[in-house]
Amino acid sequence: MEKPIRIVFLKQAEDFTDFLDHTARKKLFIAIHKVQERLFGEWFQKLQGSDGIFEFRIYSENK
Image (cartoon, rainbow, N blue to C red; front, side):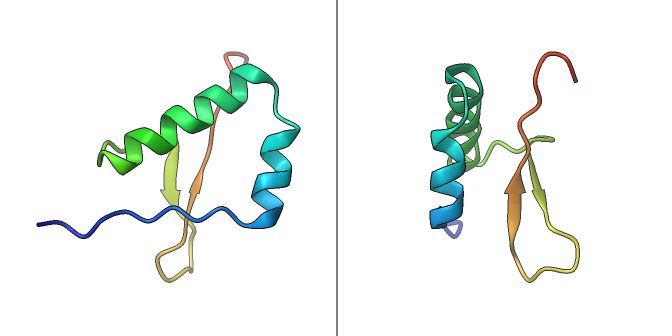
């Protein structure tokens, strides 16, 4: 069985999501759900030089 993916929100991330508009917040939580289901895409990337730290990148339609 594969190791579960653990997503941890720091206080700063929680504060940040409070300021997102509804559409961006929805996209973020959809991306989190996809990653927990082991579906990966451009929205989830490892930080260069990190030891297993990843970031979510949610793009707007006006990318």
